[in-house]
Length: 106
Image (tube, rainbow, N blue to C red; front, side, top):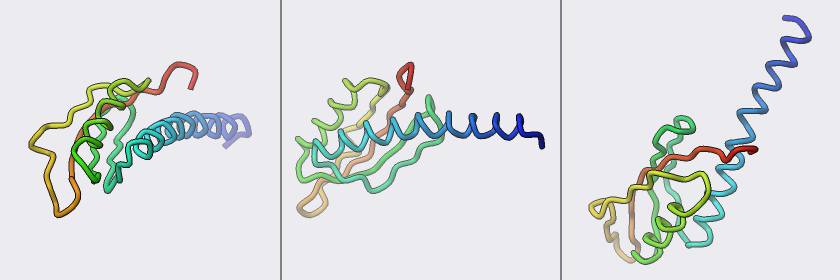
């Protein structure tokens, strides 16, 4: 493999890493701000549905988290079915889906 091909591969790898770090930074800030714990996160690729399951101390925190994702830049198609919110002892568990498209210039 030539030097130019290696440089191109590194550039491609870097381009893939940056949007993921933007997503993780934005997502974790929203989750922490609403005191939501993420148990599982499945990310196939940007533009594809992302699924997650998590817990929170109250249903209000779960709904506030959903609302924050709906209004956050890059997040869309946020879906939190009522049937996916369940009481488990003293915590609320939930599952939801959404998509994320990195904002232009990210």
